[in-house]
Length: 411
Image 1: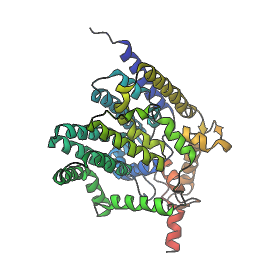
Image 2: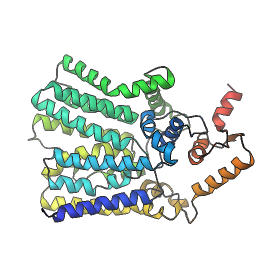
Image 3: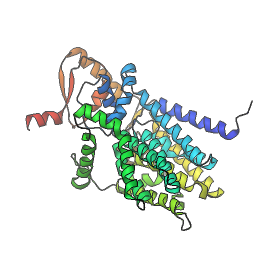
Image 4: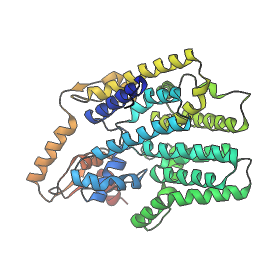
């Protein structure tokens, strides 16, 4: 019987620790989470409110049977971990089983950052990574099968997550600018095929297959040029930008090399354009999409010293990253992720009581005392979604957003 070598043993230990941390912490994300959890509850028939717009109705839909069956959101963490494991394996395979690439992706702080999140970014990244791999192969070998697979997988990634719409054009601008128009049309058709599950679901929900796509593009333009519906600032803060830099590899600059082949330069162009996009819209979550591709572009350029420096840096940032998650195994805090620590420095708190547990008990009592009633929820437009996510039961008839109420009263 073949013995498991040290590398494999250590890799397995890291993955086990990642699983334990993900399931043990009560943290499941702090941005757009209700867009997915409440959609899953809606499809399972357990949501006591209306659903708002979501960056992925499909993502919530595929999880809904398990959410309804077990009345919790554990399935989201399972699929998050599965996606991350498959991304790690994919990087290993695409790099021709290179151990440097394997350890860099295993130790990457962004993987630990994203593991507990209820988010479609993980599964979208998996499909996008292979889309990138096939467009690289097509650029070298000019086989239509590879072009179709790239477009098809890009379409699936878009079906799962609206945000990837910013990155897909950058990928194909980088690789298709010197190709014939007929190839570009073929690619667009392949993307459309990948989008079919989303188009069908949108047609079922809204009677118009392109509703979600048009809504997202319109919302993005509004946020960019008008500051959003709730007064969001379009200019990003310095803290967000610094956090994005922290999660990128130290030696990302190694992607640039004048002696590179044209094919490799196209990858460099895509990465540079994507980093510019991250500077404009500095969200740590978005680094996860780009990270595996950067690793594949630099792993073979790191000398031994650079490799160990990078690995050590990743391990340090990973340990810092998981601290807020570990705190939330037994305690509640408003510093629930590394970025939240920076943004709440002036009013940090840690409590032995979880606010979510208190709210769950209060909702149960309210349901028992006022069975069948409709409740108006304020003071913020989306506060109702927090309560709707927490409540499991049928005694409360509906939780209504204060914004919906005001719009009805003052059309």
